[in-house]
Length: 346
Image (cartoon, rainbow, N blue to C red; front, side, top):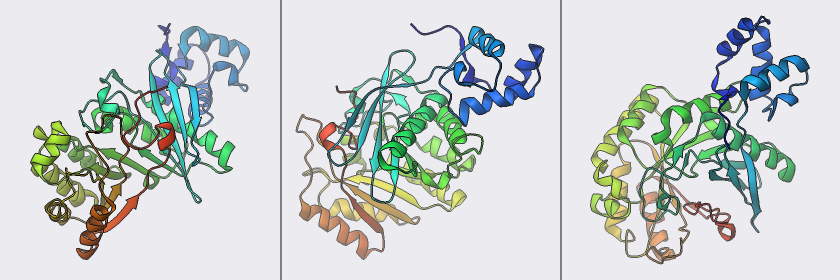
């Protein structure tokens, strides 16, 4: 049963300092606890060995640390690792470590379930139960960093918000988590090594630009034709491509950062020349990169991977129009850890 005590990680450093002063202790004790919580990722007050036993008991009486627990870990034949992460209230999300010869990437979740309704994604079939807190996002990154060091003998190098959930529908918590991840008082990672992937919420993309974020932005596009995009991503009827493009123009104007488009090509849905031409037109307003992603089936057969001929056509037309394009092969398919497959399956 979840504790009714406040999670100490919801407090800022100044609030911790104030708490200790109110307890008749020194303010710097708050700094020590803050370091244990974020830089050292302490799982319990017992871990805080440079703090007196009496103070640790006092903290235990007043607070909890609602740390995640890796409930199940699966390793793919290609080296990918999928974690089923249990939260303090018993809910489960998934996160993935994706290794290559030169780096390891953490794919993290931002919601339990998802707010949106993309038909090709297993996660969207789960109702959104709640947003993740900043510490729950942070803990996923720490767990994958530990696994990277253990299994690949190197620290985590990159983070992508491409797990369960729509990050921009949990805007404040995602930004707070990234702030902790990039802070010298936290994990000290460069924001340039973080990509936040959105299905396209125009209002929140504009807010990202206004907030002068320093991480990279990726958009799950999949079609630059409204009718087609709405048929596979019904929320597009609410946030049509014209509004999305306007928001992305604003993003580029404010940040001057290249936009990445994530794009799956399906047989009979978006595999014609008109689909490629629409994508080229959509990409023209700002420097961009297109990642053509291999589709990972979610059992029902409605969506099928397009032919290699269709992929080759996309690649040739995009390159002829001087648009950077990469064909991404999915990792971890044998353990349902690939893009679009995260759905808490045992």
